[in-house]
Length: 428
Image (cartoon, rainbow, N blue to C red; front, side, top):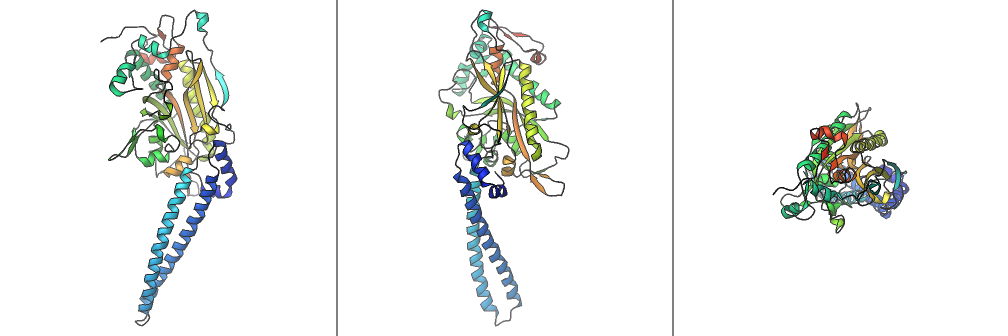
């Protein structure tokens, strides 16, 4: 949610942000109109209620002859107060509904356009020339099956399409990668947290995921009315709902480890092979609460953390600055790190980091105490350190001609010193 005072004073800035996103600029006028109606209705209610209180005192002080007439007036006022309260409540509800439809204000530096209008910030690493090495690379599923590590058929048998089993060394590799991410996060002042994967609707809505991403979310209906999270960002944002945080000693930083769930409703027929687009996966997600003026710096730090992790798994990657029309409603700016996938001959997203400024904190009422004793909303940011999809890039970029996979050096201590995952046959 945005600051209504900022919208009143800078309507054209908000309209331009809406245009850059490809969303309705007219919504800004709707919000301002709803704000005016709300304020007028509240003013009528408050003034009439104040008059009612005065009349109540007048009844007590009135003579016996005056009292009946004053009581009659009091009853009329009571009816008006009730009517005005109902009007004010409806106006406030309409205002809140309109406000929650507005997306965050896009940072001026974010590129304009849609999904394909990103800007490549930089490329890192050398893409392998498999032809020069004398063999055709296998895709991650062929490799995973060859080392008896990825079992899609039994995943489908148990749970349906886009589910899978990870086994043996591949399961260990996922755990190693996630653990290495947590270790790096803790060294940088993050608090590890294992988080709930079911949240209340108010928390899901507060983070902004019930807007354009609503169709991707699993929902448990009556009697539960809960949502399965697609990232621990949701739970970590909701953890401090309605709280005042002490940020006097620096940002509050969490590394959330959780299973995540996505319906992939808008991805029918896309990436159905392997574990690129699946309904359940594991992830380590960074989440930061900080002072408003620190959010830009913290965003750069999260991006640096992601690059450090990608360097450890030794895959070629690029960083893109996501265009405004491809941002989630909460993000003011987002950078993606995309790894090279040899068999697809393209870069695929492995991580993203978003600066959500005060948007989520306003919706969830998360504030900090300022020096003068007042409170103000904090800024929130998020970024991925490791997730199951990383296995795709690791397997394909580190494969050998015989179907084995060399384990990146940084991961070997987490794999019991193992250096190579060798091909092996499946056991019954």
